[in-house]
Every structure is written in C-alpha cells, then in structure tokens.
Length: 312
Image (cartoon, rainbow, N blue to C red; front, side, top):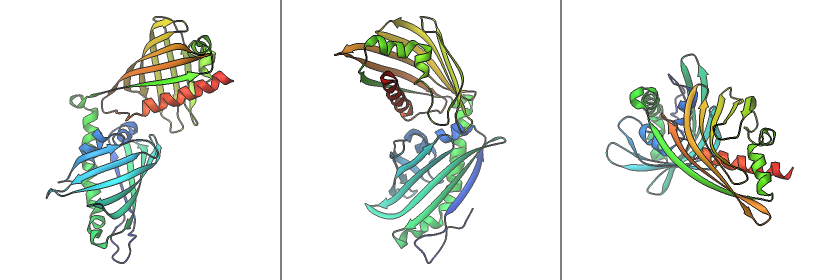
C-alpha cells in the first residue's frame, strides 16, 4: 500500500490496497454489481451511502451519494470503463460538492482466487481539481481499510444461512426474424441448430451439452470461461407447442454455487413473412447474487446470435 500524500502535485501517488476475503470470487465481484449491495458497504466507518445508482455494464453509470457523520453529503459519479467478471473492473469517478468537481479517481479492481477465498486489490489514481479537497485523498487509505471491513461483513453475511436472500427480477424481450416460425422453432429446439448460437462468447469452452425438448425433457449446458469459472445451465421443459410456444424452468450455477432459478416463456407468432419472438423471464437470484440486469443483456446477445444463425 502506497502513501497517497503528495503536497506538491495535483496527481498524488496512486493508492493500492488488498484484502483477502473468505468468500468465492464470484460473490466478492457481485458485491460491486448493484446499488442495493453498494449501499450496504461502499462507505468508510462512520459514513453511509444515502443513495446510489448502478448500471453495471461498460459505459454504465456508477453514482454514489456519501453521507458524512456531520450530515454533509457529496456525490461520486462515475462510468464503468471495463467489466470482466469475475476478474476485473475499471471505473472512473468524479467527486463533486455543490456541483463543483473536487477530484477524480481512476479505480481498477482485480479479483484473484487464493487459498481460503479471494484476494481483491484496489488501485486508485487521483487528479485533484480543488487543493482544499486534498484531505479526502490523504485519508483514502484509512477510508478504504474500513470500507473493506464492511465489504467483509457483506460477503460473509451472504454466505451464512441467516444471511440467505432472494432477489426477484423479470424482463421481456421481443425480436422479429426474417424466417418462418417453423425455422425459428427448429433453431430453438434442435440440438445441432441450437448449438450454433446458444453458448458463451470469446474465451468460453463447452464441456457438456445435452438436449431433449418435450414436456418433462431436460437440457444441460456446462462450459468453462477463460477465468476458469464453470457455468452450468440446467432446464426442464414444461410446455412445448410446435412453432408457437416453449415454457421451461432453469437453474444457473457458477462452479458449485447455484445463483438463480428462472421461468422462461418463448412465444412465436407470424410477422409478415417472418416470425415475432417474445421472450419473458421471471428470475429468483439467490443468496447475494444480484445480476443488475446482466441476464437480460446476455439474453439479448443470444437472440442476436440466433438471428445470425437463421441467416446462415
């Protein structure tokens, strides 16, 4: 950890601080992924987060309102520059008081699997706009130390039985494809056709795939990401109407930890010479895992791949 104090420059030495948490890497990473999480831990001892806005995607907003012990408040408003779960995230913050920018902080956070849990390292580089606000930089090392104390309590509570939780979310996506309903249904239900589009992106390797689309039938997909994390999709089909409808429930796991259980409904209808596909999902995200909308974004990406496969 370096000393951020530099009395002569608007660019103090960066701060670097690490902590090992007795929690899986995915869980520590998830603690950064939603406003609800960050309101509970993203503040030094004696302070609190009175409001937060988190749009957890590259280019998304991270805005935190910090309340000091004397009741004063100031906003840190940032933009996510990089999100690479569960390894790394980068966010650029600007701290303002009464609308005036006081300093900026370029924050890089890395997550590393170690014996006993996860080592998280925070590196912040500063650019001071108002010298009178240097005190905030000079106290950043201690501020981060007590903030990480709160994070340790957050991830420990998420693993304990008394800290179990369920976060509910739902979304609906609609797409129109230039293919007949029978062709779209085939791409959704034929194992070879679905394998062309239903998988992870770059750095993803399929380990296991099986599919049996009928009422009571099962589907399973396991794959390893470049980070080493293994994700598992396990589905049971409840309703299958050829060329018109699929209803199935599915569970998602990261390594050995179940993170969600969802109900998905896919409805197909003619749209001119093509097909309108409406996807509705209702999800229960488990024990501290709040996806902050990433499931909807991931499903949208898969629908894009589905559309491309229909053109091939």
